[in-house]
Length: 113
Length: 111
Image 1 (cartoon, chains in turn orange, cyan):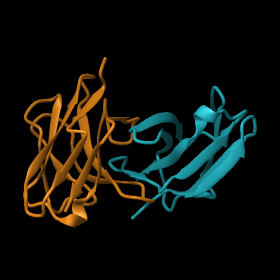
Image 2 (tube, helix red, strand yellow):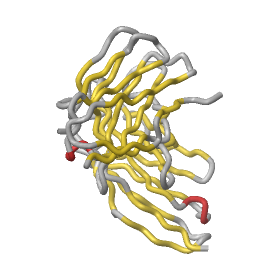
Image 3 (cartoon, one colour):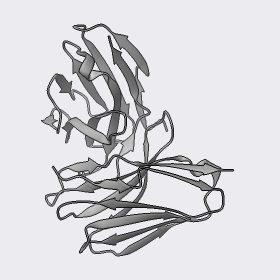
Image 4 (cartoon, chains in turn brown, red):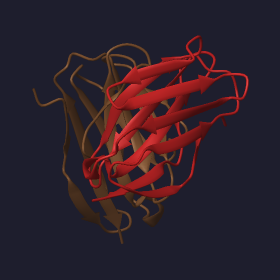
């Protein structure tokens, strides 16, 4: 049972480049989330999804887009990367409701030069 | 925005000692959760305590919740070097449709 898997684990981008982060979960969870974690700060919610085909904005959605075409996958896109988006990105999922225990992947470390 | 704030930001203790971390929040909640994060890894859920509960235990973990003071504490008894990690509290909002994480407490347990 892999849980939540994120790819890639590390990536370096140049300003203006685009990329997609992939999250996959094998627990049949309805809810999925993308967070970013910056040094000394807690996690901040970027976007989330309450089910296949749905997405919603979180606390810091600007500069990011997401898609949930399949229940098990949640993609995070950066259309034009900026240095301020240098961060560690975490994907999580939960069976029901946002305020229930969430299961996290091990993160994607993204540096934008 | 509503947020849990942990205190202290960092804690260093010897193996075998108890570790206590505190979390304060601003508005009414339905539940409060504690998570652990080992270096370079994702968060792992430890325990959830509902707003109508005052205390909850899980192995060497003891969580208390005081809704009148809007605060919670996480106690790790008989700490081990493997407990070295960052610990985060997470609070929901009254509608239960948002989860907000605090900045975390970095715990170091020296062997």
